[in-house]
Length: 337
Image 1 (cartoon, rainbow, N blue to C red):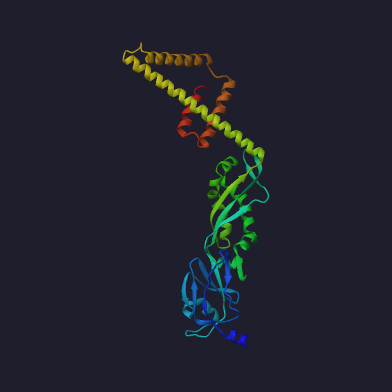
Image 2: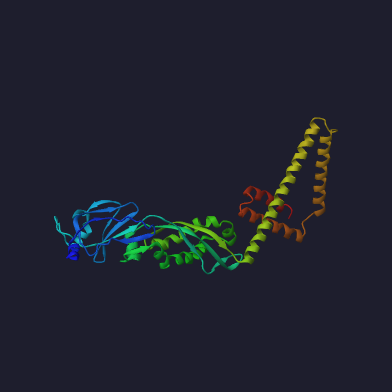
């Protein structure tokens, strides 16, 4: 008797209070009961309610409070063939989809992935990080992934292939971005923003938006890391040479200025003026003697100059030298050829 009485009870309030923080889809438990015409449906922020009639999506409700009457359920009314003024209870499955942003979802390469690089050819690379996502199109997500499962958690979604999908497309996205291993190693924290547009389409296919993508660490083979460290050391050395060269040029200008000032003041006999003149003349004579002795650059010197130009170009590409600094040094070196 009690069971029969419960079966006759109609559903008057439909809502979902999510206390799990990891649920993507939740089916309202109707216990085979019918919904009373005029029942109240509450859809909270970051939720979408979907009415499913005989396995097909009918009406979709965005956040708000609704009275379930025929004019608020146009698709379901059409599917059921309800006429205006229909007031009988009805049977339909109600699913809630969470559209909030899920953050801190981890991804990582369990096995090394092969990445091509112009300097190192194929390189086995490991990487890991986190990403944020949310359901953007609830109906599409329900059709393409959730189906009729009464509960779908974020873990089930990711374990259903999307965490491995991130890893698979990470290599393809890295290749499409044109990032070299040098750039990857130096700018790993910026790499996520570069790769996000390449990964996003795969999630959109099931109605999901990949909102953020972070590369927290990139692990390269030990021998590659050593080569990158050696290159970094060489670039730092070149930077110091460029700075030293600039300092010498500045010193020459300073001494010439001091000498001129001393001559204008008739202070050729003062210690500072005399030292400036003597040092300036000495450096000028040494420079002229070096240029006279060298004459035309030898083949070995030309090769060294060309190598220096190449290294300076690398410094410019790495952002260590400005365009103006690079052009100035280039012109100076070309004159020696």
